[in-house]
Image 1 (cartoon, rainbow, N blue to C red):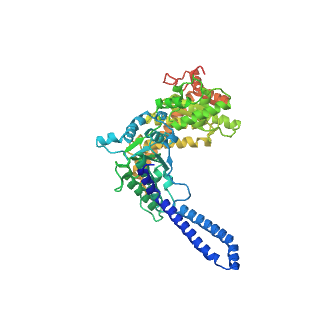
Image 2 (cartoon, one colour):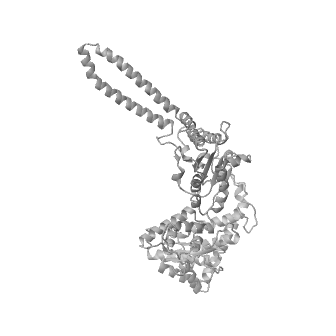
Image 3 (cartoon, rainbow, N blue to C red):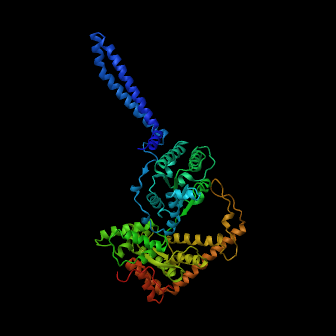
Length: 569
C-alpha cells in the first residue's frame, strides 16, 4: 500500500480507527483498574473474599449478556432507521470489471450506437490527450430506449473496456422512507466514487432505471415525498457539477432509463452533467441478423437455417427477445429430442415469444367453427388489400385470452403510415364482423376488440391527422383542456365541431365495413376454403396461407416470400 492509498484509507475509515483506539484505551483502563482492585481484594477478610468470588461469574454473565443485547439492538435500530433499512450497503459495492466480463466485441446488434459511444470511451481512457487539446472530460452519459435493447449490457461493456472501477446502483434504491435519506445515499455513493478515482485514476458510476431518481422536481403537496425527491435530485446535481467538486477527477456517470427524455429533470440534461444522450432503438434488419448469428453460435443448430428469414420474421424484436427466442428454441429441441436446433424449433419458439403459450381453453365444435370464420375474414381482407403487411400466421388455438388470431407483419420496418394504411387496418379489423354476418347472419361478442381497434384508428384519423371527409384540420385533441390534477376540464371545441368530427369517424367506419363485406362476398369460395383449412389444421403458417391463395389465383404484389422457410427443411 502506497502512502497515498494509506492516507485515503485513513480518511475513509477514520471513524473505525477512532473506535478501535477508544476500545483499546478502555480495555487498558479496565486491566489497570482490575490490578488495583485485585490488590484491594487481597486485603479483605476471608469471608468477604469468598462472597465476592462467588458473585463474579454471575456478574460477568449479566454484563456480557445485557451489553451484547443492548449493543445489537442499538446497532440494528441505528442502521435500519438512519441508513435506509437493512444492513446491505446501498449501491456502494464496487463491481470488479473482470467479474463483469462483457467485452466490446460481445456488443452486437447496435453498430451505430457503438460508433457513437466509442469516442466517449477513448476520452475516458486517454485523459492526457484530452488535456493536450484543452478539452474537458465527459461528466455523464445517459441512455434512452425501450426495455431489452442492451442499455445495461452496453454499460457493462464500457466498464470492461475502460478497466476502471465500476459502481452500480438502481434509481429505486434512492427512493427511501425518510426525508434526506436519498440525498445521503447519493453523497455516500459519490464519496466512494471519488475515492476510487483517486486510487485508480477514474471511476464509472452506473445508475440503472435512473428515472426513479431523476424525474423533474415539483412542488411538495404537504406529504414530504416530493421534498425528499427534490433533495435527492439536488444532491445528484451538486455531485455531478457542484462548486465543491474537484475538476480533475475522472468520474463518469452512466444512466439508463426506459422513460421518455421529457421525464428527466432539465437541469440534469444540460451540458456539464449528462453531456452525451444515447438513443437506443430496437435493432434493424442487419442488426437482427447479427444477433441471431451471435446467439446461435453458442448452441448446436442446423446450418441450413436461414438467418435472413429469421431476421425478417423477428421484426421489432429487441436483443432480449432474440436471446429469449434462441433459448426457448434450445429447450424445445431438447424436449423434442433433437440433436440440433431446427427451423421448426425456432418457429415454435417465435410463437411462444410473440403470442405466448397455448392456453388451456377447450372450444366446443360450434365455437371452433365460429372462430374459424371470424379469423378467415381477417385473413382474406388482410392478404388482399394491405399495402405493406403480410399475413404470416392464422390460428384458432386460444392464446393470451384470445380464441384465435391472424398475425400480420411488414417485410421491413415501417416508420410512417399514410391514409391508405390506416383504412386497410380498419377494413381488416371490421372484416371479422362482416364475415360473421355473411356466414351466420348474426354476430357475437368476439368482435368487441376489433371494434375498439377500428374505432381508435378512425377516431385518430379524424381528430388528430386531418383525414376526415369534412376537411377539418389540426389535432383537435390539443384543444382538450387537461387539468393539472388529472382528468380534463370542459373542451374548447364547439358542439357543432364535435358533431362533424364524430360524423366523419362513423363515415369512415361505415365505408370500410361496406368494402370488407364486398371483398368477402366476391371471394366467397376462397373465404369458405380458408375457414375449412383452419378447422382442419387449427394453425396455418405463412407458406400454407400463400398456397391457399395461389389456388384461387391470388398473390401478393411482392415477388419474394420474406417469411418462407428454406425449402430443404
